[in-house]
Image: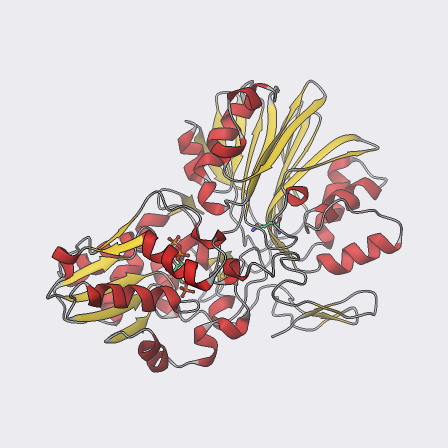
Amino acid sequence: MTPSVANGGTAVTRLWTGDYYNEGNSSNDSIFDKVKEECGVFGVFGHSDAANLSYYGLHALQHRGEESCGICTSDDGTFHYHRGMGLVKEVFDRDRLESLPGDQAIGHVRYSTAGASRLANAQPLVFKYRGGDLAVCTNGNLVNEPGIRKELEDSGSIFQTTSDTEVIAHLIARSPKNLVDAVKDAFSRLIGGYAFLIQTQGTLIAACDPHGLRPLVMGRLGEGYIFASESCALETIGAVYERDVQPGELLVLDKDGLREERFAQMQRRAVCAMEYIYFARPDSDIYGVNLHTSRKRMGQTLAQESFVDADIVTGVPDSSISAAIGYAEQTGIPYELGLIKNKYTGRTFIQPSQELREKGVKMKLSAVRKVVEGKRVVMIDDSIVRGTTSLRIVNMLREAGALEVHVRITSPPFMNPCYYGIDTPDPRDLIASSKTVEEIRKAINADSLYFLSERGLIDSVGGHEDEYNRGLCLACFNNDYPTPVEFEDAKLTSCSCD
Ligand SMILES: O=P(O)(O)OC[C@H]1O[C@H](OP(=O)(O)OP(=O)(O)O)[C@H](O)[C@@H]1O
Ligand SMILES: NC(=O)CC[C@H](N)C(=O)O
Ligand code: SF4
Ligand SMILES: [Mg+2]
């Protein structure tokens, strides 16, 4: 699929690699080989240690984005900020944090989906406008951003970045209304999946898209308020979880305290299923559902749907360990540590060539020969995207002496691109888009292969009261996108919204 984007009557073609989604990155094709993490946001309001808390909060969210990070504080009406390429612990040190005073902050860890991975696009983005200072950061992706950007540029806007996040700042700055109404109007124009934090001197605003595609939680630390993409970041700084930011909701904090507002009615709720399957940390809860527990249930459900007689169950670390425990518990087959992940490998995707990438995977994972030798192994992983990881791991287990390797995947076949903040490869490279399950089994050299059913996935996540298929976004599996994703001649053409 090559979607196009409306633009006042002129169709703008959106390409999948290089052109729009990651302009400037196309030469480094290694970053397109996987479904990649998204971004993480973190915010503090009313706590004198805002920068340090943001540092620890972002560190807890590091798995959501390793390319760049930043923190912007507000101290008595003055903004202080720092952004850099790399990990939180590389970009910030004690001196740097001391240079960011204030009792208010927003921070970000980035994995780019729109706009190249470079310093200019690192977030929070910071601006001066007629209302003073303005900082914004987001996790997600704005599907109709190119059209809005074009419209703004045509009427004089000069963009500082190629990040989709910047349009919100322009929309706010151009509005004659007060800040909160300007923000509401701006959000009502955006289509996509997002969790936004917006800061001005004395105000912090948190908002979630009308479908709740991207998670955002609020907690309390003493008198202060904390926002984070995942609840694990609250736990890390000793904050107490209070609630999830609801789809279409706008939470406003200022000198008068917390105000709960809406910019849209909640539409079809569609929380990203991949958050539950893969992205979020197992110690996080999303909408009250713990990630480890739901992944364990996915393993149990997989076992009910596709039992196979074997000697050991092993999970691909780290994301599939919970599911492997569930599969083992359900079947009575012992769970074993058949695969080990090297903690120090880090960002394997930045290695440039295919050859080095393959070495990178070997650097990252190894089979434990003494555990798998002579055994029939059930190997659990969360997803097959291109199929390269599964093939390598199956071969690794065989080379270590496994007699049989049965692959069980805790998601349905990944067949369609994501438009909501997950970086997916070119749709033609998604192995399930062109191969049957049996063909994939052969391609990854497995003795058997089974993908968790959509029904099984929904039941395993649980906690979603909506009717079948209505509480989760499953579009990368079933092509049912909760928002329009194609724009042509100013007409929305692929709307599956209610
Ligand atoms: O079919 P593929 O294109 O190979 O992609 C699928 C793999 O990618 C992810 O792992 P990854 O190694 O990226 O990172 P992880 O260590 O966070 O699981 C995912 O967990 C699968 O294992
Ligand atoms: N992965 C994300 O959530 C990315 C946020 C935003 N679209 C960017 O590319 O900066
Ligand atoms: S398309 Fe897939 S990855 Fe994207 S939001 Fe929906 S479930 Fe998540
Ligand atoms: Mg993996």
